[in-house]
Image (cartoon, rainbow, N blue to C red; front, side, top):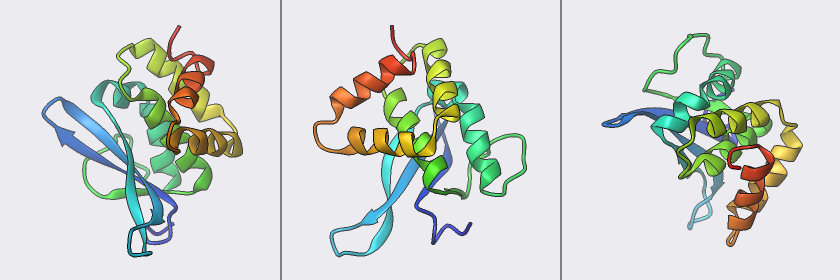
Length: 142
């Protein structure tokens, strides 16, 4: 899949704290152009805990490398992008590695339509209740 047609994408970036992933979703900007816009960032701890989910997304994009390296965008289709986007929103602000790993595993096995539904709930204004609910359901928090 080409990046210009992908509904979602993520990019690995090296920061002082470690590697992070920035997740993008295609949406209309203020001028009506269809652009990739930043959805959320996956911090260093969540990056390590969600590495299997991110590697699966990169593999689907056609990258067969074992490690996720900083550099180009990894395009994702609707299902995979919804899973990674939902994980990015769930993982935001969490510090428990075990909980983050549970959340990534649950979302990796989740149905794409279900993940898209949750992503829609979480990304709308006032979606913090949906974020808390999915955190509980994916065992990210106790």
